[in-house]
Image (cartoon, rainbow, N blue to C red; front, side, top):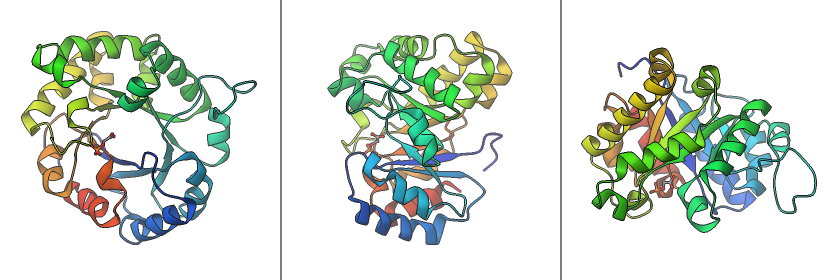
Length: 254
Ligand code: PGA
């Protein structure tokens, strides 16, 4: 595919897979995807499986990500996980501000921003999620909602930090619903996001930042989504916990 940016396909396993199930899945993925260099493949298991998945993937090109982390570096934060603990397990990526956390844990843009800065300082590559609800789309608020999320979540970053950050546009109405944004709908918002980055930072930064699409990505729609000029990968939920469908999504994106 003729794009300057390397595609990044990440599997967000959410709250699925015990350690042994995770080992099974990653074992299958490794056979087909373990040596790919044309694109970046990342798996994001739950915290409990990170150590084992990381150990299984230490040779090869697949990378490991976490689904969340604390904005604090250490100390009295019961139940939280620090960036340094993830680094210790050779975790490279961390998903921040997923819509499920925004919705069910009331995560705010300010918190996502604090986590983002902690992740960048620690040397983790953040995947920052943004996206509108169905009611917001129907009220023609998609751009203003996404713009507000970008402004709040990315506040205070310099251009180099912006370029280290992956964005994931995930319309909430398309997550886990089987309703995918059409390639045109997704491309429209991706172009808006890239324009926002150009205005806030500069053209070079806008050209370099990778913007994933997420929301009911499956083998049958991956190719068309990935062929859009401003879509640089996918954040895959449901279809990433089945080896066959995740492998097909990656293959169809090549
Ligand atoms: P889905 O989830 O692929 O199951 O829609 C995507 C996500 O939540 O990242």
